[in-house]
Length: 290
Image 1: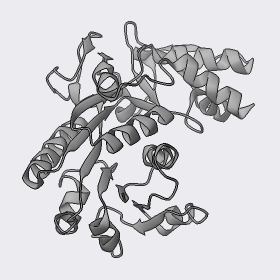
Image 2 (image 1 turned 90 degrees about the vertical axis):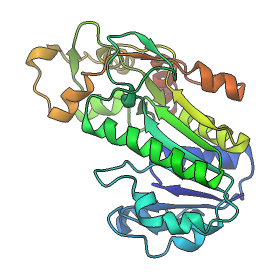
Image 3 (image 1 turned 180 degrees about the vertical axis):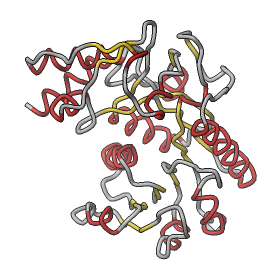
């Protein structure tokens, strides 16, 4: 087994750790980062890291990609499509031992359901360009995997949080805000659950399109309040959504209101979430920090 990650970011690193823990600490791991500075962060690991910024082909990654049995994709598409397919389709074609492809997508592809529950049978109706590009990239990978006869696992992720990327960090930095839009809820998912579920799917060569989200979608301000209570500080004041000063990108997230179910992937893998709600996730982050 050899694993190649396009985009060795937060979720990919969690997946690499989980693969080493669940299967074998000697599984070869290779991947990409956007810059030399990013590559330096992996100096103390045994990962083979290559520079690939998505704009031009990566100069050194070809040999490792061609040796991979499992490829996981964590680079967002743009108006040109998926960067890995755009620049390295020939290397993927030459990966003769390729057994499985995993693609990190987003629950944003569903669009707005007015707070109703959705599962993988729900139609995709993205409300912004980013999510539309994800829908198109998903289909491009289905077409590629189908032509290759290789199982494809599309994992639609909710909002990602974990150590270093939580309400605690925003409160410490002074950037946390409690923006209140009545009836608005979001799902989220702890990065450790992403890593473990993706690793299990890779080992099982699971095929299909699945959601991964926590079991209790909640208003975003609730997480800030909960984290502030744990820190023993006053939460920031509530701000009505209508008057909140936000970037257009941040405001666009509030145009999607839905509750996302992960029951299908958990049943397929015979497992449960380690952090089924934000409370367990934040509790674990706080305990580790303390």
